[in-house]
Image (spheres, rainbow, N blue to C red):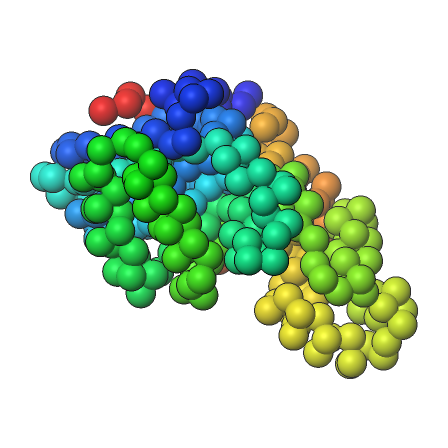
Length: 291
């Protein structure tokens, strides 16, 4: 059932990156993915709809995202009435940042950025305004050594900001997100394996060798989410993956992903994803024409 198009980008093996700037009246693409990483900047896009992984967002006037390879994404015109949408797309290979390079102490911010990009990163207005001139300078530069340095500078500046949020869930993208806490990692692995079943706080606390109260505080401090929020995110990620990849009935997906009430599942899904499970499936399989 998955209608994802595998795109062949214009990036060649000899290119460090490939940049294209477009001005258009519509910003609509079919659902697609590619092995290359991508930076996508759009302005004058108020009301446009963006889908990356299992994340759906309605855009403001500016949008800047960084995506890892093979992450499904699409845009839909939706409620955007702009007559001049400007888009700048940069494709580059993950190999440009070799593991040996990212292991260097000075490159740690970029290493962290590359890991986060596997889920897709959307940057806020503060971050966008900070790098806006750098993006425009890169557009105007002739390809060569200095343009590559400007691109590296852009990536580094993006790695420094805390004005961002992650898009796809790890459950949807089948991405393993590691943590520096062995206790948290152990609990996450347990949840990922047992999300279909009832999960009690006490058994998670026992895995971490902590009391339930202390573990709840510890998990929230380390992850930024409560344990119940994390479990729901994992279940919703798997549910979204099934909605995208199968024709399985929504009610069956609900119970297979650990929810025990279809009404509750629909309510939580809409609250977290901005649409019902059925609408998510329809969004994911709409046919679009590239403009």
